[in-house]
Image (cartoon, rainbow, N blue to C red):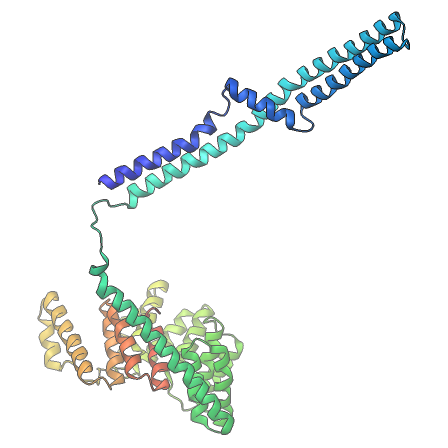
Length: 420
């Protein structure tokens, strides 16, 4: 607490140092200051004092010239008196003119400075008061310090995440380069075009991916799966908006025998963007009910259904009949027993199952479906940091397989895992 008192005192001292000349700017100058100001003003061209000095010098020269003219006999005594009188009159007139100008200039300068001083002082006081108020609202002087040694794990985790992301980017960039070279040698390699498009999508370059997926569409005889990939690249490059071209591609894919879930999902999204949310919910419910229980994209679709139904007041009770998860998981007996547990016991059982899956993946990491399920489970439990860590670990395990990295990247976007 002592440090805050010291800092507050320093702040007030600095504020006083800044405000003192502003509020004390109208005081009369001390004698030595006035003398300095007078000396400085004499040096300024065009100032009243300097103008008077020049005029007096001229008039003194004229008086001296009159005396010399009398000595030379050029002027008579009467003419000299008249000339001296005229010069003296000019000296008095110049003095009176300067005296009339000085008060007005001083008043005008003081008046002009008043608004500037007031605004400056107001801003300074506002900043000080705002900083003090912000500290009262957000500050916590009792919070202990966090030495660098106590943040070692946190720092290492951030560094590992950055390293994993850099490795992932490096793998994808290398894959793009290798695939591009392979396609120069063999442009009919359909699988290479697909992997190139998937790698570009994972790198966040959907505009370039369009070219690769369009080649797959042409060379495959307009296969429905490739049409779905091409449509997704169009949608991603248009910031998620489904334009006429993308909708046409999706409609064409819908008429094929493709079961790619992107077709129905994006067609539903197109309905929602056009204001027909009811049709979108119908399409998404049909997609979810026909999907396997362990589909990695299923939680995302169910989330969209619930959000749309809640926002539009659509009754979906009893309409979602999601198939039982076909992956290793709780048996019917486990489910029946769980129904008799307390909420705390149910949560404990769920956590035990998730932790068990994580342990199995640590022992046998070459299981892409397991990593996908673990990422989803963590997101459902609200443990986004763990989900992100699983995503990064899976990307590291399958770093040499661009198609798997593209799959995990797509899943992370669908279930809401934020990027690093």
